[in-house]
Picture (cartoon, rainbow, N blue to C red):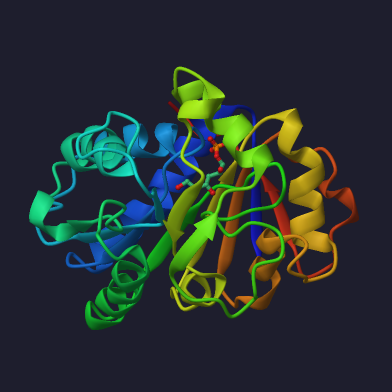
Length: 253
Ligand code: F6R
């Protein structure tokens, strides 16, 4: 595992975008796993600035709410369209988000898992982490080998995401999420974390026990992981084991 510690959120974007850009340069038809939430926003901004030919790139989102109306501005389909597809110049037909409006969301989840496999698997999966250790929407208690499925959102996750909705009541209670086993099949994992409020959970994920109690701890099971954290999020990483290479990086603007 490689950990980059950078001064601030824009720098997390520069470093992570450099890693994604290298993947796309070496494989113009790369399959990217994309995340929503606030952590990856600087990554997409910095990646757009690379001006790469993204016409052959495919992308799969990590998760989607169940039950929002089509076109809801906070549905991840819309967030991905605004922040990823349009910004990076991706072909919308090559960008997939789980179908949270499906009549049978359980079947939609199974189909999504199959679609990732049929696309040849994900080359690099971008991730954030929730305060309770979730990655994608795999809440604590998720099986380490879980597949894409319907999940109930934890209260803490709904509270954290209420900032995007008018009220807590408007935040959906269910989602479709890639499973931990699905995520672990990506050839490379790239986690972006920022803020002191994530410092404890980041240290737990990277150096605590591998356990469903902290879904992000599955990163320790993957052979090719890069974590890009700002200094505040990295403040408890001193205790990480010796296999972890921490680099202080100051990207030039
Ligand atoms: C989003 C996702 C979530 C977020 C996590 C952190 O697609 O899968 O796991 O990465 O909730 O969110 P932020 O970055 O907003 O703190």
